[in-house]
Structures are given as C-alpha cells and as structure tokens.
Image 1 (cartoon, rainbow, N blue to C red):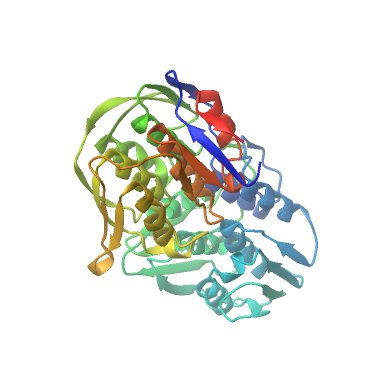
Image 2 (cartoon, one colour):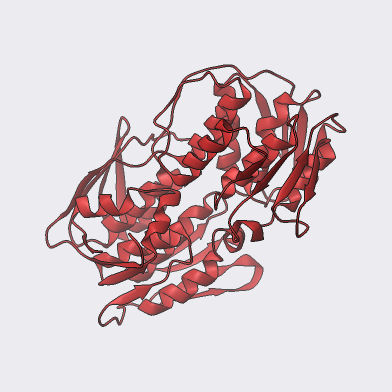
Amino acid sequence: MSGSIRLSKPTTTLTLDVPLTSSKSESNRALLLNELGGGKSELKNLSSARDTVTMTRLLDINEHTLDVLDAGTVMRFMTAYLAMGKTERKITGTPRMCQRPIKLLVDALNDLGANITYEKEIGFPPLLFKPFSQQKTNQLTIPGNISSQYISALLMIAPTLPEGLTITLEGDIYSRPYIEMTLNLMKHFGVSGQFEGHTITVAPQNYKSNSYTIESDWSGASYWYSLFALAEDAKITLKGLREISNQGDHAIASIMEGLGVKSTFDGETVTLSRGDILKEMTIDFKSCPDLAQTVMACAAALGVNLKMTGLESLRIKESDRTAAMATELAKIGATLEEHENGLWVLTSPDKPQVSGLISFDTYDDHRMAMALAPLSMKFDCEIHEPEVVVKSYPEYWDHLEMAGVKILK
C-alpha cells in the first residue's frame, strides 16, 4: 500500500469486535527489562508495531551501528542501554529521527559516567558510545515537563548502576502515567522504586525473570472511540483492555464521554455505547499527549469546541503535530490556535462545509493518518502515505475494512 487510499463510510452498521494490536509502550519496556534481567522471561502478546519489531531486532544483534529507523522510544531506551555497555557502539535513525533532540538524556547519562559523543550536530543523533567505566553520581535533577521516555530510560538502567539513582523532577511532571508504567513493570521484574512527590529513587538491585502478558494498546483503541463517535450507527467491542491500566492513554475512556461515547468494562473487554455530546470541553493532555490528535479531529467533526493544555511535546514528535493538525482540520472548517501560556483553542464549525473528497496529508506520522481516518464516517476522505501506520498499528486499515469502512487502494 503506497501513495494514497480513499475511505468512505459503511453502508451498514459499523461493526467489529476489534482485535487490537498490543501496547508498544509496554512491549518496548518489557523487552529492555527482560534484556537487563538476562533475557530469560517469557513475554506474551508482544506488539506487532514496527517500533517493537525494531526494538527486538536491535537487542538481538551484536553490531557496531544500530539503526532505530523512526522509533523515538527505541532511540531513547537504547541510548540509555548502550551508555552502560562495555563495548564501543553507535546509534542512528532516519533523517527525521536525527532532527529530534536527545541532548537532555545524553547530558544526564554523561553526568552519571557514560561517555557519549555526537557524530554530527550537538544535541541530536547519531550518537557514539565508549564503554562505561565508573559511576560519577547517583543524583540527577531534570525538568519534569520533558518526554517521559527520557525519564523511563534512566529509570530502567538505574538498578544496574553500582550506586543506584535518585531523580528529582523540577516543575510540572508531564506524562506521569508513563513513568508509573515503567516503575510498575520494573516491579514486575523484581526491582522496586519509590516515587514520592517530585523524587524517584531506585537502589542497586538485580532484575529477575518473570513472564508477562502485554495489554492491548489504549492508543490504538482511541481511534475506535472516534470512529464510534462519528459513525451514524456502530457496534464496537474492544478486546484485551484493562479497566485499571498502566497506560496513560486509558484516559480516552473518560475524555470521550464528553464526545458521546460511554465505556462498559467486562473483564478485559470494553463495549462502547452512545451518550450525550458536550458543546465545549477543557482537556489537559499533559499525561496523554498521544490522544490529542484523535480527540481534536473527532471534536472538530462533531462541532465541539476545545480548550487544551499539555500539548508542548507535540512539536517534537514524528511531525510538528500541532501545526499539522491546524493545517488538516482547516480543511473541514475548524481552526486550531495557540493562545497565551500554552493554551490551545480548537474552534469547530457547527456544520462543516465540505463538498467532495477531502485529501489529508500525514506528514510521515502514523498518528496523523489514524486520527484523521475516522473523519471518513462524515466525509469521503483521501489519506496520503497510509503505510505510516506500521509504526504502531500495522493492522489498522485491515481492521477498518473488517468493520465495514470502504477502502479504495
């Protein structure tokens, strides 16, 4: 599949018991924790996402140069892992990956005693690693509003350090659920850590082998919430999701109540049903920034106005997601603008004035493609470069077809 695809709404009820892809956030953490514990744990239901396939491949090979492709999580986790290594290595990625900042993590690791240098531009991959020799400190102070992947990367290697590690987070803490996910998974593999206030402490300990079953992906579930909200008629059941979840994107269940979707849990199955739609919502995406595009697109098509905070990290993702969403949502008559103090306002049309096919660009960003696709429940849509979904949800288009969405390739 390449170029573009055309989507149009089902002629019958949108229906599917969705066999969701597994969480790549859990998968990639579990893979590294297993490796740090000797590689003997049984990991069940690993994600089929390209990021997880890449993580698995890189942990299995013993080559000098490792290529993470476009996987930001893999870049950050492997950077911490390689920093503690005993051999000289190098890590690189796609041109876009090499434009994504990593200086804060590199500085923190070098402060701990790593020997990491930049092959090209300071602050960005590719990175060169010399063998780790001696821990210089067991105290780090870093901003709490950075990507949680930096913090998670440091936490996972923390118990392997001779003196352990204490991290003090300054200011507001963003994506806190992902930090807690990391600590919970570390505990599952035998390592305890304390997260009190703005301080996280992990003493020197050994990881232990322990089997683990990866939960389905709440980020992937978010697109089905949007499809359900926008469809004229739908019967959707989502499988493998836990009501009490490690994943921050579990928040989609409560957020979507304002957009007319209720969730009923039964074991590890969620059934969606109709509810009332609000005219305006105020949402803080600090703990779940990956949901922002999905919610924006759905709200714009439903005529719901949004006030949003916690979007700062969206500028340094696979694309500048705020700029990209502003451009694409303008095609259905919505405006997305930044106001003072990190406040973003989405103004949605009461009735989108759309005639004919809407053509959406995806900016080499998997979440752009998947967030915009549910708009096909309201308008005929064209999605450019649809293959980008392989990064996190390779089966996405197949699942849409199974549910009754018409796809012309």
